[in-house]
Image (cartoon, rainbow, N blue to C red; front, side, top):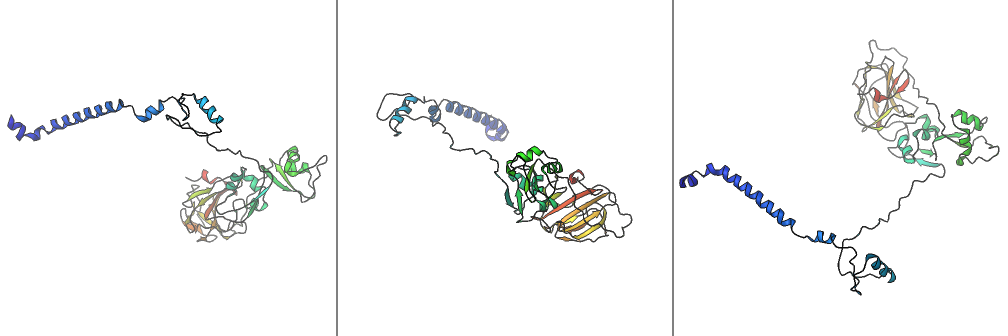
Length: 349
């Protein structure tokens, strides 16, 4: 037996390990029980009665209200408590300032990276209000220029310049607005009883709206390559992030990417336009997919195709840039069907 314990100790190793593990668990349980019986200072502090405050000049226990009254009677002079207690949370000296309406029309200068949507959000307006208050922006709503000044109305609607034959009723009809709202708008300063207006006068038309008019680019009139037709299944033209999405005044998506990033054809077709435009697109490539669809690729820094050339889906046709009316490098991408802008996300995977 002695030989078994001394010479064959390796066979007893599992038994020794189990015994050691059980002993360790018993020791941990004992330590936890011992710790739980200790009265720690933090726990003791919370158990103190908050009314046990004693002034240095008095040894009589006082209530909290009595102590506060004595402090006030002494003009707020500090006192020395004989015992301590947990501190109470004080009120935060922070004032919440409510949002206030603007008192008139202001002007904003376009900065790098701005979009009509971001400017509108900054002032709590609909993007269309920025559009319909600035003729230059309305002509090219997604094509802002850095340093451009934009008129910001205090309310949503249209900013109208009074013409020779205009009346308040005709203005209301033109923008499908309420005549009473135009008269009541304090920013217009109309005086009764006749509410006279004069040519050149600017009026805010609250709640007014305008119809959307798409921009037109000269189409290719030369020979069309035979057998070229798109599948109707589009791919993303560039890798990047959405810097401006599709909305009423921006019938496209802007895809932010570094200048020079490759732009590819979204589907098979032929190039119906490639070059510079005077409507704010800068360098533009238009692909006709010969199935009713066409795609627009704008603000390019360079393009590698020419009008009348057949292109295939995924073929590199241009490079991302910031030409034309643009506040930073991105690709302005449109999908049109029958000449009418569509929401690109409805066709992209």
